Amino acid sequence: MRTLSWLLVTAIALCASLAGAQAPRAWWSFEGTDDTVEDRSGNGLDGLAPACDRAEGHEGQALRLTGANGMTVPDEPDLRGAQGFTVDCWV
Image 1 (cartoon, rainbow, N blue to C red):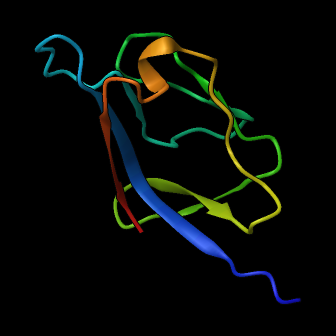
Image 2: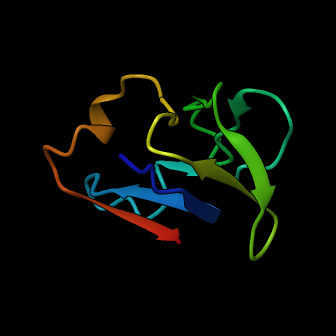
């Protein structure tokens, strides 16, 4: 079976529908070199991407996802989708 390689480019902004809140709940820009993917929203939802390679993105860095790896984030009620949310990304 052939593994598809996906290049997730620049930033993902996860905007939860929180009682009128308009600011992103989490924002990962993928800049850096270690396994930690810093949450730049200020909410402390840093992710871990230990098996992902970094790649040059359209603007800044990206994660190279192969289907066998990925990024995990801490459990956070606002990210569970009960209130609905939007995910934005460049692929």
